[in-house]
Length: 420
Image 1 (cartoon, rainbow, N blue to C red):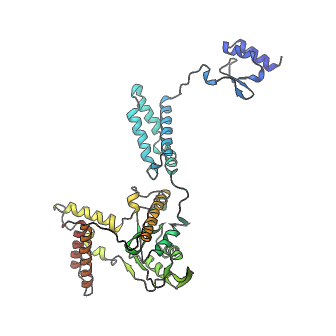
Image 2: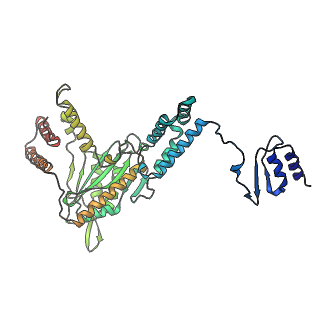
């Protein structure tokens, strides 16, 4: 008898009946669990690498070492699996799901023997940082990795756009570019001084579509030249068409656009000679004089004292004017949080780009179709146009600050449909 078989037989004689039964098996059919004492703790019957019986049928009692920790871990795993499976979770804040798990524990775990408090303590641990990566990975798993946008990454600058959308806009009568930056919509990793700079195109029938988004932490001429250079590279306009570029009063962006305007460059495209970029005869417009907002106090603060009955409405309008007309953009309607991640920004930019493609296809299939407005909106638009034309005529003789304030107040009544 071999030593290993003798040892197994001796151990079995002092062990439980289950262990004694194992002595009847040959050496290659018995696997003895390691033990500090010369008795069996568990027995697994195997032959040729396969179990001869279900190990779970062996007498045992599976009790977690810490029940509270087991509940916390199992619930976290369950919620993470739900997030991974639900595509509607895309773009949402990971910490919100962490709060949902904490809320479930508070509402569903029994308070018997202080179990609820223990589970809360186990789940919370040192705080959200303990589970931040797990929840973030689950939420970000839904972000499309292959976004159909050109993504150019340079030091301090991200640029993303669709070449097909830019070229389709040119085919559908692109006649104006509107470029501006906004704060609060850039990823937090870009820094506090960064901005999201957008270039939108206006096509025939007044259809406006986004063409380019960029995230930059510097507002220099070199950065803006790179941004406008990508637009210039893909624009194909007929020589007879004048492109109007509308910029804000930021000197760096204006100088960069002018630098990219010259010299004239042409290339063969299709059957005729078409121009890539021409700003020589372009109207370089700004959104008002640089000191206009400083002069018009009504654009900064309500023109009535705080106790006045119209003060609340004035504050409401100024907030609307700032968020919708001065700082607002379409991304703000899709992303409800400030400083979204770059992946979230790319994901929603992809959605807006798809909407732009549909709008351009609509122009192709329904040429000449005008944007429909409600009757009251059309009436308000006519009043605004009339007031602006009158203001344009009066500008030729010169305007005082009082006249500018009165004009802005008049325009504001049209925008809010209420007179303050």
